[in-house]
Amino acid sequence: MKKSAEENIKKDEILEDGMGDYQSPADETADEASDEPVDPVEALEKELAGQKEMYLRLAAEYDNFRKRTQREKEALFDDITADCAAVLLPTVDNLERALAAPEIPENDPMKAGVEMVLSNTLAAFAKIGVVPFGETGEAFDPNLHHCVSTAESEDFPGGHITLVMQKGYALGDKVVRPAMVAVSE
Image 1 (cartoon, rainbow, N blue to C red):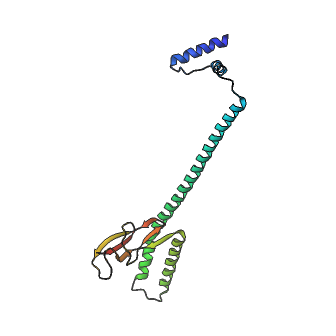
Image 2: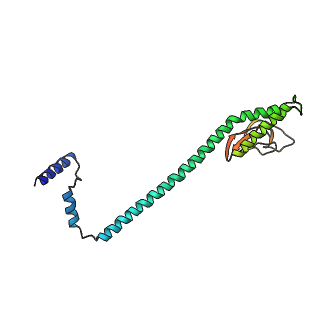
């Protein structure tokens, strides 16, 4: 009788606090007793089906998480690779300018060394997937090329590259640096 009085006091306090949903353990058993008799096998099958559905949802959620993190990791790797290549591109440009200088004789050992450094650097770029683009005669594409001048040209039809001032580089579909070009009108 003491428990019953304590439960009533708690029940009254909760009802005063605005939580009318409170059910004491005794109320729950009374509700269950008033329902139709439940087959224990059927109840266990329902519980098993619920647990199985929860497991399948959790497995699918985990698989989606795993795939999403893999895609994010690959995208991050590509971004970091492109950023590193962009930092090294001015060095490649300077090596190409050094080789194009008219004052350097063909058989100069310094020129041979610069050629080796440039070829090794370009080979390393190719190995990580960074490739140059932007050649004279190509059709101009504003997504790939940065037009710095236009001029009439008898050699090329309108909208084609007449002069490449700086090569462009790409990593897959991502442009690391657009090519700076002159375009025919």
